[in-house]
Image (tube, rainbow, N blue to C red; front, side, top):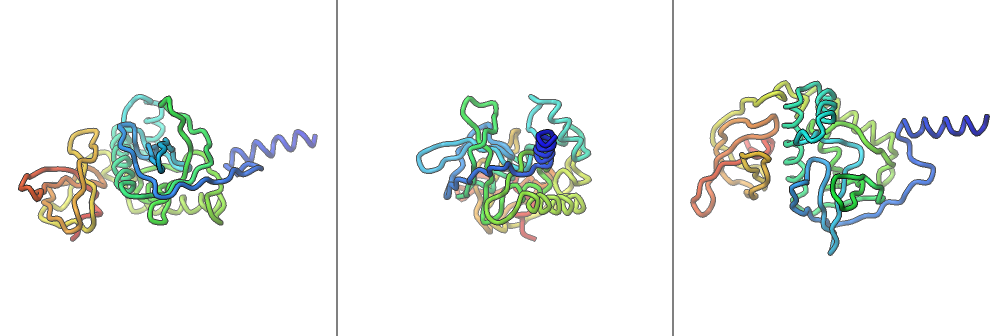
Length: 259
């Protein structure tokens, strides 16, 4: 009976996402850089640390897919946000741009080398990534671009897995209430954005207007742009002039446009 009860307790603990009896220690990689790769998306990245390269997949969160290779997963993600499959794919593209923008400069990776599997022949590990003292998982949930799903270890520091889960749930509740990202009423199609001349409030990563909307460069803080409209709940289509005099169009985060 004792053995049966212990087994049931372990199964229950696993279902609730509790940490294992022997918690693995975190390895910390500081000053990491993002490696440009076509398979980078909202929650999985190729990363360089010193002279080595890795593939990391975020703990805690799951950003929507960007293609239909796994249609069942796309549909499951769409149901989570109560949006169409097509809107889920657009959210996945937005999550990719969001994460790549935040990882364009140095960041810190915490990993226990837990196998995250993946389509690549190269080993992929679960990790938590921190940018400017904020975990990327928190930023994605705050923006309404990822759902709460996946392995949930005790995070680095003093927080427990339960406390961090409650924090993410609170961030998601706020994102849903304020209609951010996939929670927005415009998640199933383009919205309207105030057009006109604006300036960038900070250094901003610019993405191509053509799918899959890869980064094409960075514009510095204060650079004048012309907002042409909205491309997504979180993205505006802009026109800008380079120092060379060449005029280009691209996409950028709406939150980076000054009033």
